[in-house]
Length: 276
Image (cartoon, rainbow, N blue to C red):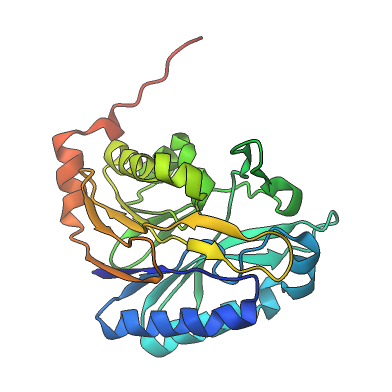
């Protein structure tokens, strides 16, 4: 299977972002990709809650979701929409950060709401409280496809290895980690964490990312790390998307999952223990 990691640098305008994403998805399919992945926040990146309320939709009416489902069907590809910001209908007004796996007929094969919220103080001047705007999910998700079993996750989930162990033990051979990874923490930790998740679970890890400085009509502009990565089950980086928008292609040989797990079968060696 040929996979394509789409690297974006979206603004806070979903209408302007959509044709760029569609164009890259079409280019990826034209280059032979049967599995195309976009990053977290494919429809917009914004920290301004009032602006989000003004431009976001619920799942049933979201134009980005509808357009990308139509593209998957028209191109006959599997498409991971890394995530979309969506109105959730929650009483407290918080949004959902939701990933979608779209089948080649345009149907939604799986959906996953980001479990772990990015509530951190990166520095004295850089503070994030994702949970103020987004409600966390509560369910891990694996999806069956003809080419592999896929475990879904989003961005900050990457720092919680027990989630990926659960996904691997449920049969996942590919772990998807679409992200809008912070520029500071990305430079320090992104590659190391992705390689660790691949090595400890014997899985391919596919991580399409946002990059650069994201234009904002409201609120402050954000910077993300880029470097979409594809990592093999033995831990080798197969492809790196660099720091500019574009397409990164990688050919996946699923036999490498069994090979890696056969050499170091740690996924079968977990033990319960007491303490501390």
